[in-house]
Image (cartoon, rainbow, N blue to C red; front, side, top):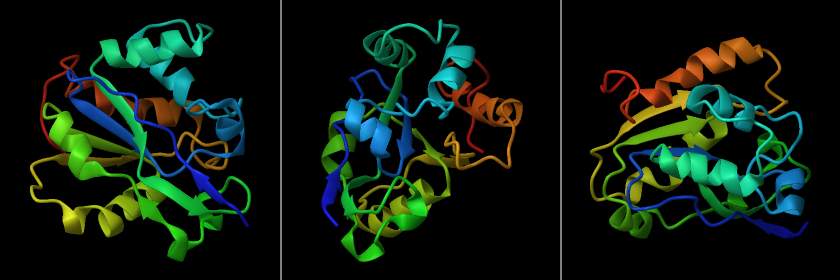
Amino acid sequence: MTRIYSFAPIADEHAKVLILGSMPGIASLAAGQYYAHKQNVFWRIMAELLSFDPAISYADKVQELKSARIALWDVLHSCKRDGSLDAKIEIETQIANDFENFFHGHRNITYLFFNGTKAEISFKQLVMPRMKSNALCYSRLPSTSPANASISFEGKLKAWQAILKPIGMEPNHCG
């Protein structure tokens, strides 16, 4: 099994929110784009929440996130995995991204939202023990993956509205 690698973060110095996935799936890796699988609803949810056309180009979607002060990355820098499912990630092969340097360069980020359980667990196991400061608000959101079929699109959309609070579209608070 070959080692796979995540993408560089989508972020600028104005970001207040960081959305973290675990590791891009096969379709995303092949396309070189976050959430490229046609059934993954991440971009559809972002389009609804940020009021942009979901049919715009990937570059324009990235710009919409940046304009909304939202950063996007994955917890894992690399790992070995058979297929796209998080459950298939070989635990002993996980290497986390360099969050110390990332947070040093993105000091306005105060909110982390995990796109699913695996991202949250990986961050808490691999990253949090090495963090010098823990002045962040954390929240796990339902995975936008098509593998998370137990929650409807409407249910996911409702839960994901939480990202609007810290970017000033709703009252700002933790929890």
